[in-house]
Image (cartoon, one colour):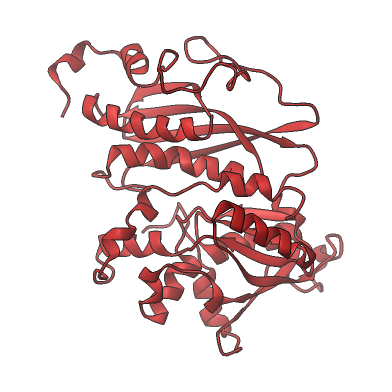
Length: 355
C-alpha cells in the first residue's frame, strides 16, 4: 500500500531515490565503467564507442504483471529477473554487457516494493558491470521494460542463422524446473517433495553471460531458452535452413524432474521455457574445448543432438524443396516419436495465446 508521503513523492524523487546510483559505494569504479560518459539525469545517456572491430548488440524485453509474473512475486527477485532475461539475450549472441535502460509503469508508489525491486536489479547490474543509464517511469498497470546494450567482436556473433550440417547441439545447465514450479503454483499438478528448493529457477534465472563470451569462435549459433527448448531451437533451424535430431531423454534435468514421471519430465524440459539456459551448435571437432569451458565455469554442458540437414537458401524457396526446421525426436530406446507427439513438444509459449 502506498504510504501517505507518496502523494508528495514525484517521478524524479522516485528515480533519484531508487535508480540513481552515482554515489553508491557498491557500484563499480569509474574506470570500470568508462564506456558510460553520461548516465541518468539528462535527455539522453551517452556511451563511448565499443573497442575497435567490435559491434553493438541491443535487446529489449517487457514483463507484464499476471502475464510474466504473479502479482505477489518477491520484488527483489523480480528486479533480478527483469534484467537477467535481457542479459541472457546478450549471452546468446556472445556479447559482453555494457549498460541498460529501464522503463516502468507503476500502479502506485510503494516504497517497500521499490526498495526491494531496485536492490535485486542493482545487485545483478553490479555483478556484470552493466549500469542503469536511463529510461522512463509512468503510472499504469505494472509493466517493466528493459533495453540492454552489449558489444562483441564483429565476426563472432552467435547468430541463429549460423548453424551448419554436422554441428553438435549443446545445452547449458538443466531445463524444465521453471515450468515445473509454475505448474505447481497454478495447480496443474500436485506439489513434488522438495520442489520448494527449486523456486529460484523460475524467479531468479542465471544469465549465462560468461558462457556466451567463451563460445565466441567455437560455436556457430546460439539461442537462450525463454519459450521452450524445442520451440526455441526451431528458430535456429529455420534461420539456418537446417533440420535436427534430438535425443530427448538426454536433455539434462535436475533431481526435481529426474524423480518425476517421464511425461512430466518431457513436458517441462522440452517445451517448458523460462529457463534462460543457452542452446548452441558447434562443430564436433570443438567438443573438447567446449567441455573444458564447462569445467572452467563449473557449468554442466550436454550434447543433446545434431544438425542433420542444411538446405540451400535459394533452393528452399521452391515448393518442391523439403521443408527445413524439422526435428526427429529420439527416445532412450532409439525410437522416433510420431508426428503427433513431436508437434506437442514443439509447441512453445506464445504471448498472444491465452494461458
